[in-house]
Image 1 (cartoon, one colour):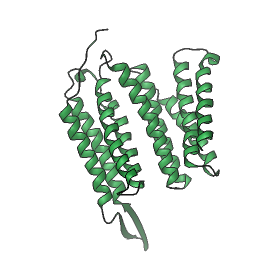
Image 2: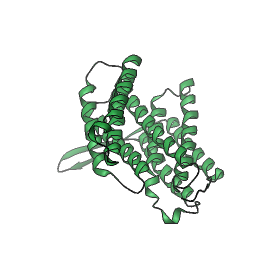
Image 3: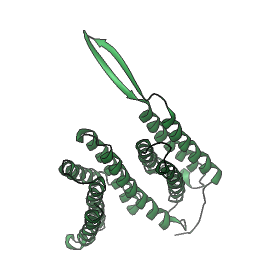
Amino acid sequence: MKKNHYPPDSNRISVLVATVLLAFALARLLSTSAYVIAFEILGRVIRLEFDLRIMVILLASGLTATGMDWLLRSHPLVEKKRRIEHWFVPMLTALVLGVLLELLPLGTLWWWVGFAVSGILLVLVFWAEYVVVSAGDTSYPVATVLLTVISFALYLILVLALRYANLRLFLMAPAFFTVSFFVSLRTLHLRFGQRWEGAWSVGIALVVVQVAAGLHYLPISPIRYGVLLLGPLYALVALAASLLEGFHIRRAMVEPIVMLILIWSAGIWLG
C-alpha cells in the first residue's frame, strides 16, 4: 500500500476549536436556562420545559459534525470516501465535554482545567479523524489508537458526569445505550476498515445498559460506577473484534477476560 501523509489545515482546526469552546462558554453565561411552553389540547394543559443550556450543547455537537465535514473537504482523497462516519467521535466529544463543563462549578480551577482539556481533546479528535481518511497515511496507526482511546475515555467521562448529576435510571439508560453503541460501532469500523458491525454494536450496547441498571441502585461511588461499566464495554468490543477476525472462542476470550479483571480491579481500588 502506498504511504502518504496529508496534514490537516491548522487554521481550519483553530477556527473549529475556538467556535466550539465559545459555544461552551456562552452556555454557562446564560442567565436563564429553563423555558416552559404551555398549550391547551382538549381542555388539558400540556407543559413542555426546555433547558436552553442543553440545547446550546446539542447545537455545539451538531456544529462540531458540520465543522468536521468542512475540514475533511480539504483532504485530497476525501472524494473517494464517505464523510458521515467521521462525524461520530467529534459529535460525541463535543456532547460529553459540554455536559462535563455544564456540571463543573463555573469560575473554579476545575472548570478552567476542563475547558483547557476540552480544547486539547477537540484538536486531537479533528486531527485523528482527518488522518484516518487515508489508510495509507503514515500517521494512520497512531490516529486509530488515539480515536479508540478518546472514545472510551469520553464514555467514562459521560458515565461519571451523569452519575454525579444523580439522574434517574430512565434518563441515564438511553444516554448509555447511545454512547455505547457509537463507541462500539466506530471502534470496530476503525479496526475492520469498510465494515460496519451494527448488530454487534447494538448487542454490546444492550448488555452495557443491563449492567448499568444492575449497578445503578448500589451504594458505590461515581468513579467505581464508571469504571465498572467501562470494563464490560471494552471487553465486549475486544471479544467481538476477535470473533470477527476468526479466532476460536477460547482464544478470543483471553484478552477480554484479562482486561475486564484489570479494569474492575482498578475500579474497586479507586472507589
